[in-house]
Structures are given as structure tokens and as C-alpha cells.
Length: 330
Picture (cartoon, helix red, strand yellow):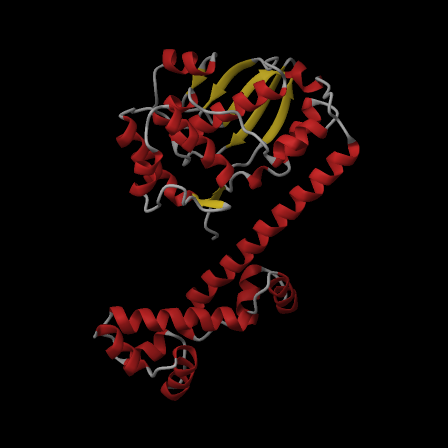
């Protein structure tokens, strides 16, 4: 139900790689409606990935844009998940800590670590609808990060992608230093499991606890945003039948009305305000962009009586619906 997003920390290295490759990132960003330096401060809508990578292909002239940019990627610096590695006792412990908070990087990833003898398999996703360019550049970023964290002791055996079509086997080997397999059931990196036991010279339990707590707080914040967005979507679905009530929405979310009210309060919003906000935005859109009669708009916005709609609209906007439509069109 929720809108999927990626942390902006995933996009900034890509922008840096574009710059390093001789491509002006401003031209790429302009194609998706953003100005240079105008990347979202926290989360990047995943729905923009397809447009973004098409813009990268157009600007670089590279068919395999993600793979091309891997060669220009900087190593992640200052990332919270990186701190979890450093403050853990071993590389493996740090990796397992980081995987608990993989959603801080992207809603589209569902990572896990499996050890199969002398091989470790880091599965990043099982979904096949990831942009291949996004998947290939992210694989490169993870490899660079792991090399930096282990002082180049990280040994990669294979890379697996779920997309069916891509670059040649030689191109993948040249970039990743190992074979890459397309059309796999999982998006994964296969590497020497012995690196999991590598000790961290900077391991500090106190720092690990602090970084873990900070990651938990960030994850809770994302979940709060999700909740508000989910409630907004359900309000939009239910309002036309005048069923956008706290009880109906909480039922659809599988929680009690009291629990939903408490969680919204913690997120700094009230349910009735979300309903009013949606009704107001919908009414203004219908008044300005359609020729629907006021009586129809009353029904579409979930009001039972025109008089109630008129009073609410005047309170929201300071104008009657007719005044607002006439002023907007003039």
C-alpha cells in the first residue's frame, strides 16, 4: 500500500559517480523535475528510479548505465550502517547488525545472510521488479563498501541478478572481478565466508549500543511516515462512501481504533485532520479542474448535505465553493 522509497544516501554516490564520469548531474535531475542540489533531504521516491535511470542512459549514452557508473562510485562515508560495522566485534556481527536496518537504505530490499560452508550468500532482494541499473549500481556500492571495511580482504565469488537481460559476461567480470549471473531467483552476492570472522580494531560495545539505538529511532520514524501515508490512502478510498472513519480505517489496518489514534498522535497528526485535509484538497481539485456540479462534488468528498460541505469549505478556504471556482478560473 505504501509508496516505496530509497534513502537519499543511495542516490548521492550515484550523483557523485555521474560527476566523476564527466556527466552533468543537473541535466539528469532536470529530466525528473529536480534542480541541481534539490535531491530530497531524506527519502527518494522509488517510483522515480525508472525515469532517473532512463535520464542517465540518455545523458551518458551508456546502455548499461548502472554498471558503467559502478566504475566511478565513491566509497560510502559516514553512513549509519557503516558505523554498525566498525563498532561490532567482527565483520560478520556488523553485517548482521546492519541487515536488521536494511530498510533504512531502501523499502525494496529484503536482505538476509546465509552461510553455506566456505561460502556466504548475502541476498539483497528476491523481487524481480527492481530496475536492473539500480540493482547493478547498488551491488557495486556494497562491494566497494565491503572492500573498504576489510582493507580489500573481501573476496567475492559471484553476483546474482534477477533481471533476464543485461551486459555481457565479460563486462560484468571486468567491473565486479567475478562472474555475474542473470535470471537468478535472488539478487545476491556470494563471497568467502571466512571474512565474517575478521575482527574490527574499532569495536566498542558502548558505541555499538548507541549506533543501534539511533538506527532503531530512524526505523521507527520511517514506520510512522508509512502509517500516516497508509491512513491517507485508505481515507481516499473510503471517503466517497462516507466511510472514512477511524473505526473503518483501523479495521482495514488490523488494529483497534484506540491503537491507531495513539500511533497517529505519536506521529504528530490527528485522524480528523487527515480526513479534512483530503476532503479539502479533493474539493479544490474538482472545483478547479472539472466541471462537476457542486452537488456531485458534495457526494465525491463524502458529505451528506450540501450545507455541511459549504460550511466546511468556507472554514478551510475562506471562500464559498462557487467563489473559489470563479476566482480560480478567472
